[in-house]
Length: 511
Image 1 (spheres, rainbow, N blue to C red):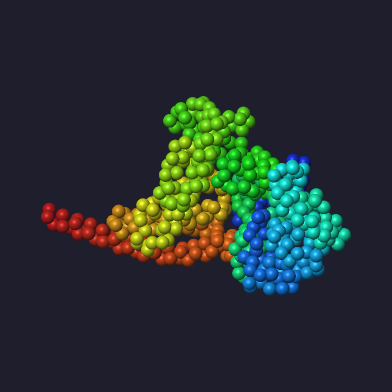
Image 2 (cartoon, one colour):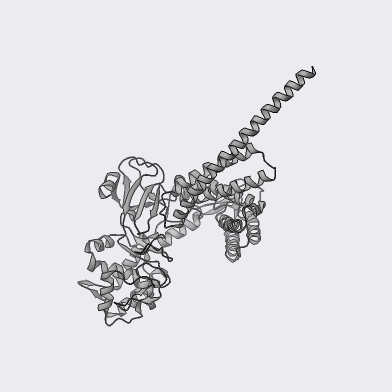
């Protein structure tokens, strides 16, 4: 895999981007670019206390070192880590339980002892210490990582490495800026963990940010990360990854990147006030009927693209805050969500990121409701509304997240499920004929095939991997159902032809 990566990608460097990846040759969509093991894996910041071996909820302490939290099924953890804690006789037995935020930084320090090459890889990564110094996150790490570790004599020096506050802040910065989420991690017995983990992947972290990515990341059950091309990447193009959320508005994405990654994105989407025509950031104009006010970052101002009306910053803040409060405080109730969506579609717009958040919540609630009923008893209006929401979200994802997309794959699966169930109901009630049922089922089959094509890259231990397995079974069942409906349509067509001939012969006899 080392040789494969080197034939596909080149690591380059510039003052503006630092180190980054460039395609050496044309890369096809879906092609594997890199498979990489993490140099460090650990719990997310502010995570619940969990087993240091599998990161499932902890219920006891390691019997060997007497300090590391473990679950009931794990009897050991990393040998270097265990020996370190076992030899740390001055360290209180509850230190890790009381200061669980130190676990991952400690693992970074222990690389100096266990694998000096990985430690050097770690320290070569960007930390943005100068930008972080004195900020809120700097003070948080000072309180919950730096002070607890430096207070203990055991952590002040590891072999020849002198541990200082500056070194610990640098490590915390490296973790915050460069780690990737691991959701499908399993322990040695193959049991999936519950808590989210983060892993540090030196080569993958070299990818440049763009709000429209051309790569897809999938992590398997043993924390191995695989990087795929989500779209065709021509030779000479940079490899991009979206380090924020696709359905965030430009303001939300920029805020996330500025606070977490310490840069301002200037991609095509961020520079377009309409967000490539999706209007995820736009507000309804207060003067003209159909106008939308977009935000011009360079000015800065909110201005209607139809009539030129400008919105006051105070009004925008008020509308946005009210929407956030309504959505965050809204119980996951279908009627309440519909009210919130209707209300804020009038002041924001039906495709605003906050309205879409409420619509995603609504689609999830409708899905849960549909699953709670017998297939023939699901309210038709619920199926129809779910189908509408899936169509709307898919329309936006096709623009903002083109190519192979995890979100698009999930939306396609939900779209297919709603379309099949609704079409069956409409056929049973006589609202559609056999031919129209067949056409709708074939459309659902195409959507399901496309969903599988996007989700097949996910590891079986992740929720998306489990969904892929389910989708493959449902595709087989759907194709069998399509064959039955097709046979029904052929029989009906034959019957129509026979009746037509009889009518023609009867007419001739009368003449």
